[in-house]
Length: 240
Length: 243
Image 1 (cartoon, each protein chain N blue to C red):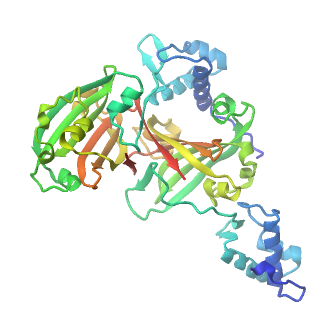
Image 2: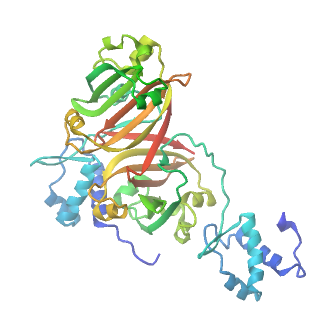
Image 3: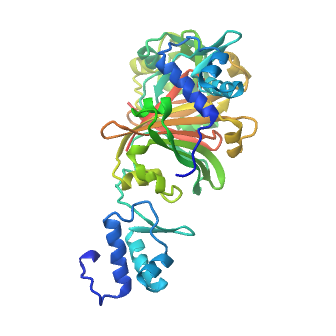
């Protein structure tokens, strides 16, 4: 092609920074050179470099500490959406410490929305479990699970800050969660969610909602969750 | 097989022309994904009537060897690989409304140096070229996503001459025998810069879903890396999972 294409300065700056991290084998929480030094090294003006850093902050590659500079973020947790691995397993496999807190565990009456997902009549007794989960003291997800109360009588007696929900459902109630579907989109935190996650109200988060079935394809769990994308990345493999 | 029929000088002209074009496609003079000469040019080259040319070409369009695109010309269609439509897993985009009309507008199609980042990714040298395509995808006239695609130049040098508003990149892979067998997709949130946000009609909030996808062929070679910045309010993504 005759016209010479110029990579946009901001994109180039993003690539330079990403590469610098790889080539210098920078570890998580290591500090990047100062803005002034990076500008000099690659001959960018300040505003170009800032806008590149801004983008890498938004994608969770870098993080900022007030007054002390820009740092390399720890790699995100990767959650493969195509298996039924629980968050507990994902965190353990990454060699990290699970953080889990039960916000509420109570019996409610089925709403229209829950009824449609779990094929239960309106007003049917439902267990609602709300948990905040994360890694090393950092809250990452708020997960809300709805399960038919008749299928798991006595579930209130388990402590889900130490037990995995799927583990208890399978071992104690014989409910094996094997397949399902989920939908993903963006949402924005409300005041309550923001407090639970320790972030600003109105911050963008990934919204997941879905249903998990047992081996007879009967819906067992309906869930809704929101996730901080700076810490977790969702993945899937596509086979053609 | 039409080509087994004996063509002589007594054969009707439109059939003779059809075989000329067919031979040129089979011998690689007209390459898959590119346009053949216009009807006027062919008429002039062979000293025949334009309607005769059209008759000959219509037959090849009917056979699926050529594709006529309104206002653009007639393009060579390469061999297609039957693709399993029930492809396993992956984020499946489901538009909120059914029967939406998709449309792709190419914003940039060029080659650039791989640079440090993409040389790492593709296992090539930083000074090697990569194809870079940036496009805007619409559904029912509404912009939905901006996509950036990177492909090492040497994997498919012919891409330079191919009109990507006529053929999808996947069709082009099929034409040139590149088999994508596996792709690794990830989903993050990202923020668009003002220019790109404006193209997606995003005003104040510039958060988008960012799908990154690395595609491999059967030899585990990285063929393509793409990023798709998608409006979170216009599309749903569904994933099925299994133990």
